Length: 518
Ligand SMILES: Cc1ncc(C[n+]2csc(CCOP(=O)(O)OP(=O)(O)O)c2C)c(N)n1
Ligand SMILES: [Mg+2]
Image 1 (tube, rainbow, N blue to C red):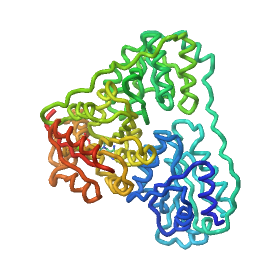
Image 2 (image 1 turned 120 degrees about the vertical axis):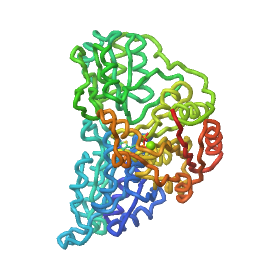
Image 3 (image 1 turned 135 degrees about the vertical axis):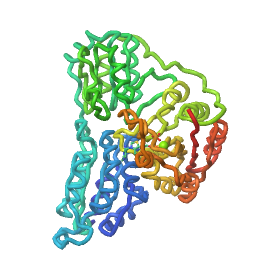
Image 4 (image 1 turned 45 degrees about the vertical axis):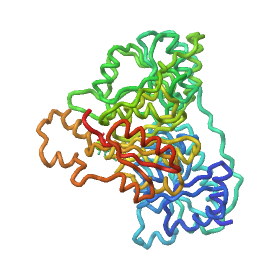
């Protein structure tokens, strides 16, 4: 058994059996070791940002790490932006990155670079293997690090750098056990103290595992009993939502909106969430958005047992009630007329199947959340770290993880441009992904943010930096080029028909939604 084979065996021993790959010469022994195993899935992605984003989506749906296989510092660097989103999601992820043989590094051949230096800022754990015999233990440690209860800022991305002589040298299969991860309980004292002060002007802010079905049920019990509200952070990694589940709202995006919401809150309880701050700094606004009159209580950190803490809190307040439920509604009618974020949302509400998985990026997709919440059960995966180009790749990983569930990727035409190569992987793997491109032909939010600074005179150069026309991007042609059928739509009924067509089409489908006036 060589080092590469011992690495793959160690992954399989721990139940890690999927790799999103874009290999090169220094990874050939790893390719060979993967090739030898029927029980290990290898999926080619045409850009490394698709590999890292897909591994993130896979982890959010399974709770298990997928691996990426990347080519030295340059390949890893291409994957860093979506590693950032994965880090913000606390997704377990294992990057396997090839490196020159140890003796070859000193020759400074063209692909030589500081691989560990590239990995460090987005990784909780980085190691460069130094022997073939130790590679299985290195792999065990990488798996353990990806599953560890790390604090928020570290995340759960583990990067194992593998000099090729460690892959081709003699390996050892060590029966390396991955230890179960213990998540700390919230202190009983903290729970009862918070319980004694929960009231109508309390707000429970939830993140992490607190948004699992069990977590939102417990938060719903507390909210119902105490008459307070429970909401998630603005861009949670995954939320279970729909009729039958409690009405868990969401922290808004703009700082003014958050300030307005918190003005009526005297008591903020953090359940796996961090205290709200402004996404960006503005000269006339604070970074910390919690008003002075508001007492902030940390119930539980995200890396601790958030669900148990919410359960303990519900018990401590004596919440012998069913959780309050979302105000379930019939599915909306398909709206007539031109499309905008709102009419796309209503049409999705009318048409998408139960148990769908939704991924979002930039663009107007977020407007669909309050609509879908009332009428269709779904898992919603957000762009956690604000680095656009995550939504398509995350959809790939979610579809690989849950082949029986339909996946919808709601993407802005700006964000989609960063990682559009995901379409080819979706076509090749016959993934059940319907992509909806919100085609307004502009980086719309940048225009909004520019004006928010008080600049109303948008000059030609500035306008050209926000504009996506001239030439217009033809998303349907792009999709066809990657082997994905699709259609362009302008109205609610056209979109509705396209969604039916997507459902009846095996594999992926792309809908370019041309947005008119709001
Ligand atoms: C990696 C990365 N680069 C740049 C940005 C800055 N940025 C934020 S939103 C955006 C444009 C989004 O445009 P689009 O997807 O078309 O959505 P729209 O605002 O038009 O609804 C850009 C460039 C970012 N967030 N992440
Ligand atoms: Mg746009």
